[in-house]
Image (cartoon, rainbow, N blue to C red):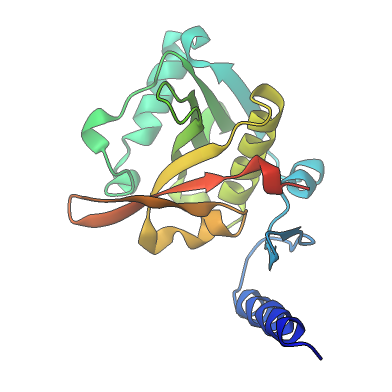
Length: 204
């Protein structure tokens, strides 16, 4: 067996073992091969097998009415989200963005914002991913991120998706195929954060 084959076999075994050791409360979806690494989640499969009893909404932020806007802001500023968002003082709904959220009994229970980048990188930014505390660790965030990637695929084809996240909680995004953007690491409020991107050239 060639050295490169042994190396490849070892890496596949290592990552397979790593993900098998993780526990999840949601159903397991089949994996995809991207960049030679086995991903935990295939966003297309998750979207096609959506099985949560929530209403999914996508709205341009400029078209949100006052009730919807205040409901979203109230949800994002709830005490349970304290210290989740890196720039809490800049928490706002961007007019040029989109809001994607789940609703249950007329209440926002999960939210994420999508914004087209205005700088030279030309990426699509996502932020404020949040789930109601009582519903966390039940696969809600996984479904919402999958829906968000699918939305970006349709609305901004061939554009990479970017997200600034705390390095300590980056595994969730890595499981979808987000990878660190080399050189983009900062420290904010004592927390080390990094820019992670979802590269479209590696999709199926």
